[in-house]
Amino acid sequence: MNGILYLVPVPIGDGDPRDELAPRVVRIVNDIRDFIVENERSARRVLSRMMPQAALDASTLSILDEHTKPEALAGLLAPLLAGRNAAIVSEAGSPCVADPGAALVAAASRAGIRSIPLPGPSAILMAIMATGLGGQRFTFRGYLPPDTAGRENALRELELRSAQEGSTQAYIETPYRNDSMAQSAAKVLRSDTLFCAAIGLSSPQERIVRMEAAAWRKVTPAIGKIPTVFLLLAAPPPAQTPPGRLTKRDSRLH
Image 1 (tube, rainbow, N blue to C red):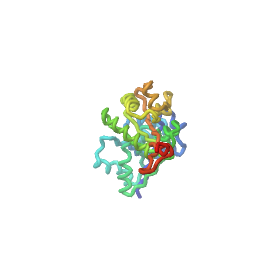
Image 2 (image 1 turned 30 degrees about the horizontal axis):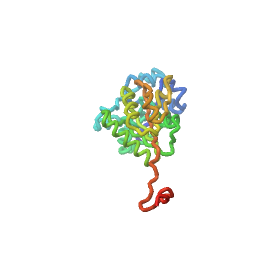
Image 3 (image 1 turned 180 degrees about the horizontal axis):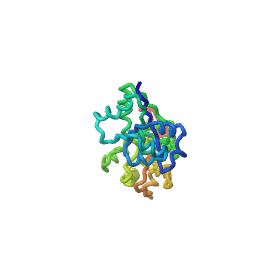
Image 4 (image 1 turned 90 degrees about the horizontal axis):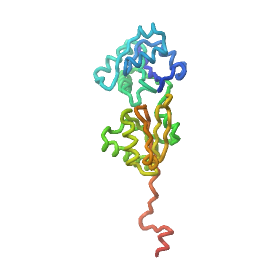
């Protein structure tokens, strides 16, 4: 029988996994010796806080990152096809969301391998919770274009979608472009659009900035290179008067 591919979350900040993750997650990790990780050094650091050093030394850590070619996925599935359980370990938060692990889960499904997501933190959901924009209807957009013109056009598109759908639009940015992102949003969003930055979630630097775009234009808070989730919520467009139909105000003019 094939092994099971577990999707293992890790703390978003530098918290202790034994404090911040469910006991079930730690128990499962301790029984696994085949791990798929994005960065070996950071993965060993977090795994060393979840399992004995001897067990970690006996484990194999294979790399799956943005440079991994599709043809390499079969090799990563080899332990599972041999009947051993394996785990994708996230760099931060829950794996396979804006994360290269999604490609391996898809390949595992095609190979008849079961994937089990384990409970843990998600910066996206935590940001929606903390900003109060509402999670009844939201869309996660991943990364926006890195160039200024592309970024500003994408922000206008997200604002339009938000207004039309009544939905929160959430996205992330490479940390060194955080301040450029905030400046672009302050520049192009409508004055009454709510723009939020959930900065450094689950870390000592955590803070939530929630203001209308007009306020961001007056004072754009510096974010720096701290992991941040950005969100916006636009007011719905004004109701349109159907053609040929007069409003009460219009009727007084005739």
